[in-house]
Length: 216
Image (cartoon, rainbow, N blue to C red):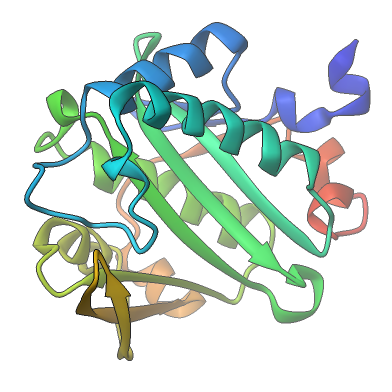
């Protein structure tokens, strides 16, 4: 079976409403369709790399290519797990957890997006809870980082719900104009204090070497 060679295909994160896992080909197509339909209002740009400015067909193709790229260049020293977020079998968006030199630094970063039809329902909070549980409870992370532009109140609010604390700012150029990112950091103790979503993880043990960790 393919999971014998790529055990990440068997990894499952579950919350009361959601399942997060690597998408099948059909689910990846559905994720691409979601991106083509829109992720945010045209007058906003919540991403440091403005991939959503691409025309719909190119935007959809970029989602597919990015998933293939991150699977193909995965290494225990530099990995990004791009999980499809599903509710009752329907694809809602993507949740990413990523790290470099995780075995040494024990630090992860997260990023996500949802189709516009699925925003405003608390899904973002639940899917972030899933990957934080994977990082802290499953992989033994010490810290998680995140960030949001100053005008991205919903993303910032999700982070605060999980206990993240301000960690300074960065300045970038996006769409040719200066923007400010508010950095956030979450330590293990704060995560334990603030976690409120029930999360279960299935199929993690055979994946540990791919994250740079010894077999359990």
